[in-house]
Length: 110
Image (cartoon, rainbow, N blue to C red; front, side, top):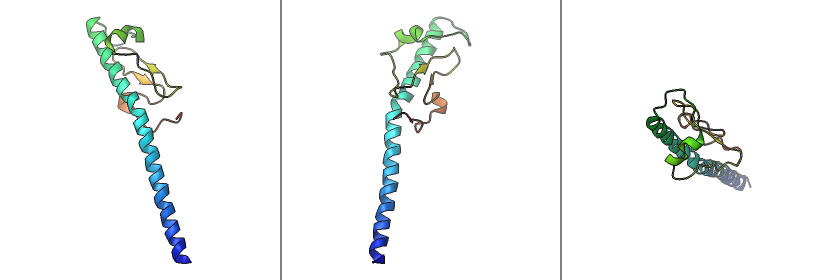
């Protein structure tokens, strides 16, 4: 009887670990488009700033940089929004932060 209990316990531990890893992988995969969107926004903002001779601290709107983007970026987390920020600042996602502080596990709205 003890032998079967240990086998069942071992299987349960393996299943819990596998489930946790699968959940994390799903969250990382779902958050990856946000990271890509932030990079695209940053590139578009740099291009806009160069062409418009903008200085650090000058305000930038989404409307300013839309012509430099293939499509309007949308966050795949319903409550998430992109904030373009000023020249010299990284664009920001209200869920994941900036590209330099990007944390894929902060997807609590999934």
